[in-house]
Image (cartoon, rainbow, N blue to C red; front, side):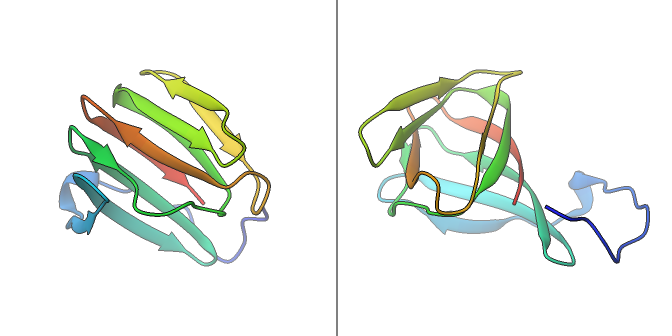
Length: 109
């Protein structure tokens, strides 16, 4: 990831309007800022959320609250709890997320 063509800036996430994204079950609420080719998001998953697709995109994800279960298409599984992160490159490991109790994440992709 090369970060170019945007100045220093501060984001007050309370000022960003959330967009709703339905999962197979549950809902994700995204607050998004774009900086050139880099997307930065604060994402909240409702309890019972299950993604409706396998995502091939690379991400850096930090769990702030709750618990996030991530399943890779190869069948392996990981759990993120507050203070934990995962990193994956584009096209490296298609994945999908779910949470029983809900989760709040900070995501860069």
